[in-house]
Image (tube, rainbow, N blue to C red; front, side, top):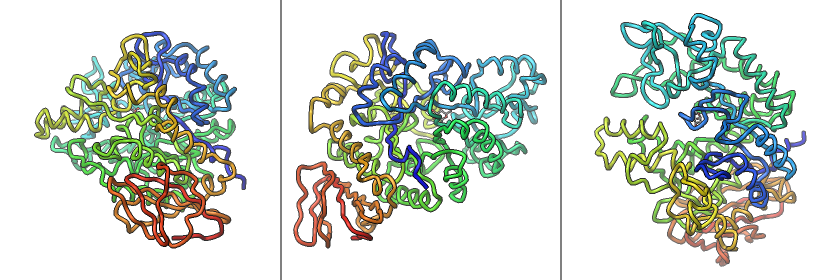
Amino acid sequence: MAAPWWHGKVAYQIYPKSFCDSNGDGMGDLPGVRSKLDYLKELGVDLLWLSPVYVSPMVDQGYDIADYRQIDPRFGTMEDMEALIRESKKRGMALIMDLVVNHCSDQHPWFQAALRDPEGRYGRYFYFKEGVAGGPPNNWRSAFGGSCWEPVPGRNNLYYFHTFAKEQPDLNWEHPELRREICDMVNWWLDKGISGFRVDAIINIKKDLSWRSGPPDSPDGTCSVFQMLPKTREIGAFLGELKETCLTPHGAFTVGEVFDITRDRLPEFGGAEGYFSTLFDFEHCLVNQTGVHWYQHQPVRFGPWREAVFRAQEEAQRGGVYPANLIENHDQPRGASYFIPAEDYGFHSVTALATLSLLLRGIPFLYQGQELGMCNYPFASPEEFDDLSTREQYARALAGGRTPEQALAVCAQYSRDNARTPMQWTGGAAAGFTTGTPWLPVNPNYPTVNAEAEQADPNSVLAYYKKLIALRKDPALAPVLAEGAFAPAYREEKSVFAYRRIAPEASCLVLCNYAAAPCELAFAQPVGRVLLNNYPELAQEPGSLHLKPYQAVVLEQRGPGVRT
Ligand code: GLC
């Protein structure tokens, strides 16, 4: 069977509010995105994922949608959207939108009507329940903190359910009329010519309808709303319907944001016949999560991180899933800060991280600014946080006994705002992002870390990314780098991140010395062709390689079954 078209592609996530501002209001917009299409084309990406641009009160930065069929005026008009679809296509790039249908905004007309009459037609689009013993219906804690239940104004003892913020009421997928509305809307967008969707928080659409309290996992007696996920296996009926009535007829590409499914369900969700084309692999982004709240987390350690990547790759391969790989997105801190110790940050570490991530088996998803080496923002006070979940985590850290300084340090490390500071285009005012005042401050490293400077420098992170993307997409290497099998290598080495991509006729060894100290590595066979190297040379002698700090090389070996 021929591989799907998107196996040979590289994807790029645009966070429109922070990408490029065309009208000086301090927020990015669609004409801004359009003005950068040539930059993206030159970078070599083929598939653009646009975070939400629908009408929204922006409580959760557009993931709270008040009208699924209109563009928020902050971002432009429907004509701007259509022009963006057209212009992307013209350059051979596919555009996918964010599909946020676990919940909508509390300002959506459906919810406004439901609040007026919870027992009426639109009341059935949501979950309303009576409280218990003078409190909410159960002890579930929402993803952004606080109860999942919000009292209905003007009603005694009636609550509505929200997995995320209280301004994001959950949609009731049990109700056929609601599902029909969603399908119509999805088809409407696909008919406009978008190529598919990144599907937000989709695992949450099925609820545990017993609504029973769970064992507390926090000192306040609450338990995470996500504890219900293992009890919601029948989600397949909803997803199958969405696939059959909307996605398959349009040949849509979809990437699911699917947390917490057990490994045996990978094929069902992301296999060749799965509900989605592919699924994001988040395993490695969670390796620091040693508790339920940020202040309980530990910095990433190399060994567990590498194991998480290997495990996820092996499980995806076994399950027939071609995964979507990333090191950062709009919900994560910057990969260059999360996976690289601060004292080691620099060209070699950033390009080593890029190399080992982009050549994994699967489709790479870059996040805006990653290709420049953008890193976390140096937050100096809690007032600088905009993100609602960061503010909540700051309060949690204080409640958990951390000092204000400790709480700030933790939140600065993990805040989603790190990824949301403006894209750094130039060394000029506001990094060339806007002529006005940017909605979030620009990272002070912009005089050196910016697209203009890096475009002019053949040894920049950006220049390396271009080479790396070109390599990943080289049609001659597709049997290996797009379709080849994955196998870990040098697993016994303490600081080497290495793996092979193996095809019948050739294989590639991706080899990174992921440490600030040099390393000597036993290497029995000829080195083969060096396809990429983040240093000018590769030092070798018979039987061994000498890798410099954070040196990354890609070696091609011809012939079947090559192994170290
Ligand atoms: C997803 C989005 C995140 C958002 C949440 C609620 O996880 O990626 O940004 O806050 O869903 O919509």
